[in-house]
Image (tube, rainbow, N blue to C red; front, side, top):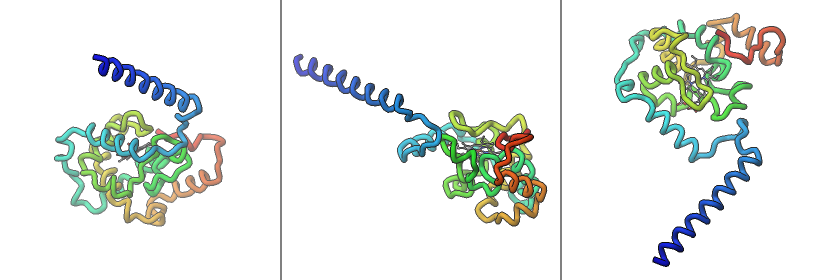
Length: 192
Ligand code: HEC
């Protein structure tokens, strides 16, 4: 009986100490968006994203898988809707990405490339809750989304010259962005 009482008191004291420590950390500004998430947080978050993808999404295949040029038709959509965060080359090194929490995924990374076509389709259509990744199903038809999946598949091997050659008008724009021009239309906002 005494043991039980001591154990309960011990647990309550421990909970109080943890609560005070967490509260103090929060008040010290621990929720700033420009920090890097730790390893455990990243692993748990990645698992949650995987869990949120329905099992039958993995079984859906890209209708454009056999079309080696399907990704070209997605470049303009990508430039308009994705590049502000993910970067023109998909590496996620943009002004916006560095200051977001969680960070913007590098689409050329092996972690993303290991996902099935159907999982990528699901992520683009539905977004990722509690992150900056929006849902795109109102903007992009299923076919447009599948072509974006084809583009993501090409990302590890796409060169910057290749992307610039496809869409020179946006190449000029991204140079302006590099100059940090914020007048007129705000280029840090995703354009619709
Ligand atoms: C406003 C910023 C923003 C825009 C615009 C955006 N994304 Fe994302 N995206 C994110 C963030 C942040 C993540 C990381 C989510 C996470 O941590 O799971 C992400 C993750 C992803 C992922 C991988 C999910 C994972 O498990 O990491 C894919 C694929 C993706 N985005 C594709 C796209 C495509 C395609 C577009 C354009 C149609 C797009 N994104 C537009 C911010 C954005």
